[in-house]
Amino acid sequence: MVFTDACGRLLYCSPAEPASCADVTHARKLGLVRLLADGPAVEILADAGYQGLGAQTGGRVVTPPHRKFKKNAPDWYEEIHEQRRKAHSSRRIRVEHGIAHLKNWRALARHHGRREHMSDVIQAVAALLSHQQTAALEIDEQG
Image 1: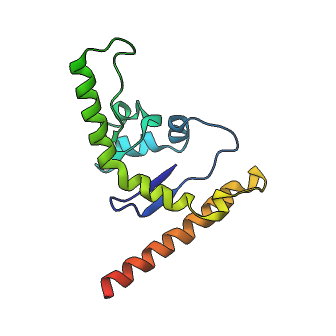
Image 2: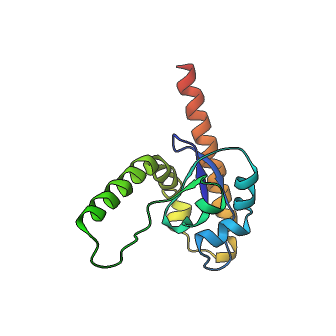
């Protein structure tokens, strides 16, 4: 699980799970639901893997709209659903760019080591990327 700010800069990268795990389950294990329900009023733009957390966090987790019709949806519904999906996607694009910066590091893109070490590799790359982004921000502010 990765958190970025509104500009796509990396804020947090959780440890990797030792096995396959649903996004929403991982968020619950890390205590995200409890933290958001009791914590500051922030808005988290999440992908569809986190659907259902919005209701548990008082609307702080915003996911793409859920499809109410599986088949034979009315035309008006299709239009509204597509508009809402695009609006969410447009707001979330910087988050996706931030995640892409993390995935572009060769150590993650071409990891051939043991799965047990993946969490350490992710944390190391996340720390390097965060430092790189902070240094670039400081240079921008000076110049």
